[in-house]
Length: 318
Image (tube, rainbow, N blue to C red):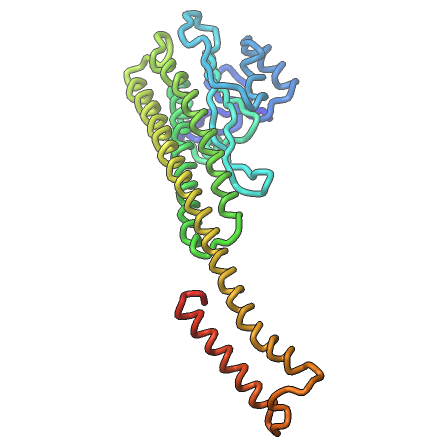
């Protein structure tokens, strides 16, 4: 899907035709026809677009220090996206997103929709997105990519806190599977953030792009946001590792408590079973001649059961 946006006088974005004015082309899941069209129009290498079709494509930058004005610069970054694992639990994947800077247009290309891109489209003013300067536009998107990891980490922390509140009743492995999904997400985050960092550094060090007076502050904010996400990822991962061990211990302890109660109940119910089995035999038994023998047997059985309950309770078995 290819959509072209131009800016209105009020700063809003509108879908516009491919003219020579400043514009933004958002490309999601590009088809071969769209790839051929863009390569022909902008005259950049085909792999600028096909890179995002590979989910394992690593972040990189190209032509950031080129001196020819009509050449396009490429920055490939990885962004987080909430998905569902094969076991049915929520986890985050990371996917590549290409940022292509040309003299008259900026392109964002991804194989999966990014939530912050859709936020830009719906409310560009609140997102502080402007097409007046394409380099500012690129830096703003970079900041949102770095910030998306922090938002995802906050969500993982919130979900972990919810699990913690239900931990005392945990007796199944679902909690462990959820934590495993979050840990897999953090591993992906750490790899993606580490590989995104050199691209951010290359942008900050470019001698031909992003050299406006305000760009230094923007690139510093982006690198700071990325470093914060790396630190949060490491901290959250350590917490989840400890929490995973704690959950396993609590689940085992809760199951032991359940088995202890069930064993105690089995022991108590064994008393009337034994007495009933003995007095159910077709032989002469003591007290058989008593008129109220059944009542006395039931009374004695109840007394023995109550005594057994009190014994188990006093020894913390019940």
